[in-house]
Amino acid sequence: MAAQGRSHALYYGAHLEGAWWTEALWQELAVPPIVLELLEPLRRLIQAVEQELTPLSQALTKSAPPDLPLGLGKLTYEVLEREVGDWNRFRQSAASGQLHGHVSAGRQFGPAAFSGFH
Image 1 (tube, rainbow, N blue to C red):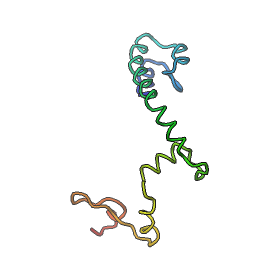
Image 2 (cartoon, rainbow, N blue to C red):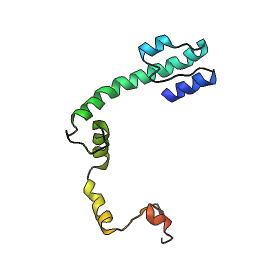
Image 3 (tube, rainbow, N blue to C red):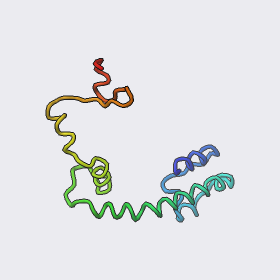
Image 4 (cartoon, rainbow, N blue to C red):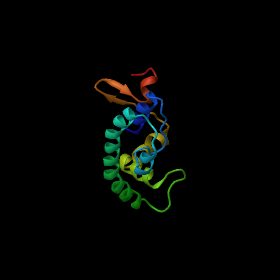
Protein backbone atom coordinates (compact mmCIF):
# COMPACT_ATOMS: atom_id res chain seq x y z
CA MET A 1 0.00 0.00 0.00
CA ALA A 2 2.89 2.34 0.75
CA ALA A 3 4.34 1.62 -2.69
CA GLN A 4 0.96 2.23 -4.29
CA GLY A 5 0.88 5.64 -2.60
CA ARG A 6 4.37 6.40 -3.92
CA SER A 7 3.20 5.39 -7.38
CA HIS A 8 0.22 7.74 -7.20
CA ALA A 9 2.49 10.57 -6.14
CA LEU A 10 5.02 9.87 -8.90
CA TYR A 11 2.28 9.93 -11.51
CA TYR A 12 1.59 13.54 -10.50
CA GLY A 13 5.27 14.48 -10.27
CA ALA A 14 5.70 14.21 -6.50
CA HIS A 15 8.25 12.03 -4.72
CA LEU A 16 7.43 10.35 -1.39
CA GLU A 17 10.07 8.81 0.86
CA GLY A 18 9.97 6.78 4.02
CA ALA A 19 6.83 6.31 6.07
CA TRP A 20 4.85 9.07 4.34
CA TRP A 21 1.62 8.02 6.09
CA THR A 22 2.84 8.85 9.62
CA GLU A 23 1.45 11.98 11.22
CA ALA A 24 4.74 13.88 11.25
CA LEU A 25 5.51 13.27 7.58
CA TRP A 26 1.90 13.65 6.47
CA GLN A 27 1.84 17.22 7.78
CA GLU A 28 4.97 18.03 5.75
CA LEU A 29 3.79 16.58 2.41
CA ALA A 30 4.02 19.10 -0.39
CA VAL A 31 1.91 17.39 -3.04
CA PRO A 32 -1.00 18.50 -5.24
CA PRO A 33 -4.49 18.18 -3.69
CA ILE A 34 -5.39 15.31 -6.03
CA VAL A 35 -2.48 13.31 -4.61
CA LEU A 36 -3.69 13.92 -1.06
CA GLU A 37 -7.12 12.64 -2.08
CA LEU A 38 -5.53 9.49 -3.48
CA LEU A 39 -3.24 8.99 -0.51
CA GLU A 40 -5.75 9.51 2.28
CA PRO A 41 -7.54 6.12 1.95
CA LEU A 42 -4.20 4.32 1.66
CA ARG A 43 -2.94 6.18 4.71
CA ARG A 44 -5.93 5.05 6.79
CA LEU A 45 -5.46 1.44 5.67
CA ILE A 46 -1.72 1.43 6.40
CA GLN A 47 -2.31 2.91 9.85
CA ALA A 48 -4.98 0.31 10.62
CA VAL A 49 -2.72 -2.55 9.52
CA GLU A 50 0.18 -1.17 11.55
CA GLN A 51 -2.07 -0.87 14.58
CA GLU A 52 -2.95 -4.56 14.29
CA LEU A 53 0.54 -5.82 13.43
CA THR A 54 2.63 -3.84 15.92
CA PRO A 55 1.54 -5.73 19.06
CA LEU A 56 1.86 -9.06 17.25
CA SER A 57 5.35 -8.23 16.01
CA GLN A 58 6.38 -7.12 19.49
CA ALA A 59 5.09 -10.38 20.99
CA LEU A 60 7.02 -12.40 18.41
CA THR A 61 10.28 -10.56 19.02
CA LYS A 62 9.95 -11.08 22.78
CA SER A 63 9.80 -14.85 22.26
CA ALA A 64 13.07 -14.96 20.27
CA PRO A 65 16.09 -16.47 22.02
CA PRO A 66 18.93 -14.18 23.09
CA ASP A 67 21.52 -15.88 20.86
CA LEU A 68 20.42 -15.56 17.25
CA PRO A 69 22.12 -16.89 14.13
CA LEU A 70 24.31 -14.30 12.44
CA GLY A 71 22.29 -12.12 10.07
CA LEU A 72 18.85 -12.79 11.56
CA GLY A 73 16.86 -10.34 13.61
CA LYS A 74 14.43 -11.42 16.29
CA LEU A 75 11.31 -11.04 14.17
CA THR A 76 12.82 -12.80 11.14
CA TYR A 77 14.06 -15.65 13.34
CA GLU A 78 10.64 -16.22 14.89
CA VAL A 79 8.82 -16.03 11.56
CA LEU A 80 11.21 -18.61 10.07
CA GLU A 81 10.88 -20.88 13.10
CA ARG A 82 7.12 -20.86 12.82
CA GLU A 83 7.10 -21.33 9.04
CA VAL A 84 9.59 -24.20 8.96
CA GLY A 85 8.43 -25.94 12.10
CA ASP A 86 10.85 -28.90 12.22
CA TRP A 87 14.28 -28.06 10.77
CA ASN A 88 15.27 -31.74 11.00
CA ARG A 89 12.99 -32.65 8.11
CA PHE A 90 15.60 -31.08 5.79
CA ARG A 91 18.62 -32.93 7.16
CA GLN A 92 18.20 -36.32 5.47
CA SER A 93 18.25 -34.97 1.91
CA ALA A 94 21.11 -32.58 2.57
CA ALA A 95 23.22 -35.17 4.38
CA SER A 96 22.79 -37.81 1.69
CA GLY A 97 23.28 -35.39 -1.18
CA GLN A 98 19.97 -36.37 -2.73
CA LEU A 99 17.71 -33.77 -4.25
CA HIS A 100 14.05 -34.63 -4.15
CA GLY A 101 11.34 -32.98 -6.18
CA HIS A 102 7.76 -32.55 -5.09
CA VAL A 103 4.94 -34.08 -7.13
CA SER A 104 1.58 -32.35 -7.08
CA ALA A 105 -1.30 -33.11 -9.45
CA GLY A 106 1.03 -34.88 -11.84
CA ARG A 107 3.57 -32.03 -12.09
CA GLN A 108 6.95 -32.27 -10.47
CA PHE A 109 8.54 -29.32 -8.69
CA GLY A 110 11.95 -28.83 -7.18
CA PRO A 111 15.46 -29.71 -8.39
CA ALA A 112 14.46 -33.12 -9.79
CA ALA A 113 11.98 -31.43 -12.14
CA PHE A 114 14.87 -30.05 -14.18
CA SER A 115 16.98 -33.20 -14.29
CA GLY A 116 15.12 -34.77 -17.18
CA PHE A 117 14.10 -37.81 -15.07
CA HIS A 118 10.38 -37.95 -14.28
